Image (cartoon, rainbow, N blue to C red; front, side):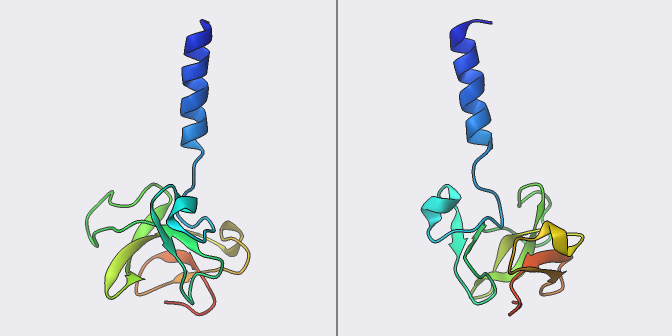
Length: 109
C-alpha cells in the first residue's frame, strides 16, 4: 500500500473516533462543535445535537430525539440504552419525556 493512502486511511479512522452523543463535555468544543448539555439531568455534561421529533435519522446511530432535551421546548439527541451498563457513571437508563429508554441523569428531564 502506498504511504499516502495509508495516511489518508489513518486520518479517516481518527476522525471517525470523535465525540459521540452522550459523551461528557464542558463546552461545544468537547463535542466537535455540537451541543454540550450542562443541565441538572446531564451531570458532567453530555454531547447532543438539535433534532426533529418524528423525523427518521435526525440523530446519529445509537441515539434518539427526545422532547425538551435542549431546553425551551427544543428536542435534542440523547444516547439510547437497553440497560444500565450502556450508560456512563452517574446516568440511568430510563424513559425521558415519553421517549424510548435513554441515558439521563438521576434528576430526569
